[in-house]
Image (cartoon, rainbow, N blue to C red):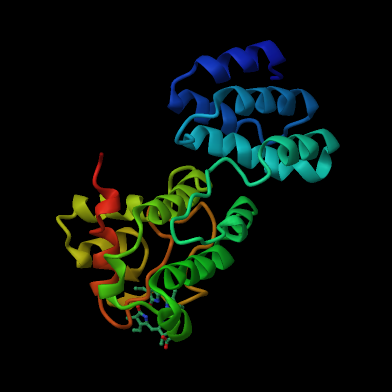
Length: 232
Ligand code: UYC
């Protein structure tokens, strides 16, 4: 059943978030008419912070852009660095991460996120390629918000540190209950890096980004306990 542009427009602009999402799931075919409405939507919304619905719309357009000069030009003109403001107090350029997430290249995005966290921690962490838990409390809230928003907005709200934090609080901070929930352990077996993990949106909620548990839980504990996640 083909929906007219007017029907699509009114449903997209007026629906609840759930209805908007359901509608967008049906639009994978696309075509110029659909894309026109989606471009109009993205331009008119521009919420602060961006919503996961806008993230999904952006994603559909991003996927479409190689097939449409118009979509390509639109994204380049209005959203050259995506829809998440790439704010950094530490002077980090989050464009490479934005690009990987827009491409849904979650494996490379995960690697780059760890590198970005090491950059936040400073030169010695960048060299050692892993974090001390004590480095994390000094991370600027702005940068953690940017990293988290990038992951959430480009994953239909599935991935990101704040999502992991909610799940962790939901199991009363019990790590043994969290691991199987987010697909990091099955029974007695740790999920093997990288091939055991699910690098797409079929993954369980909170699956990404990863934190290696080889040196214990203190790093992820510090990350999920950061004041950045306290509601303001
Ligand atoms: N790995 O098993 N992991 C690595 C995870 C563990 C191990 C990297 C996550 C358990 C070794 C990432 C899980 C374990 C390396 C992750 C997981 C283990 C490595 C690359 C489920 C053995 C080689 C970035 C909790 C029983 C590197 C990095 C090294 C790498 C992630 C082994 C992202 C979420 C306890 C030997 N694992 N990791 O941190 O440091 O190196 O020697 O968590």
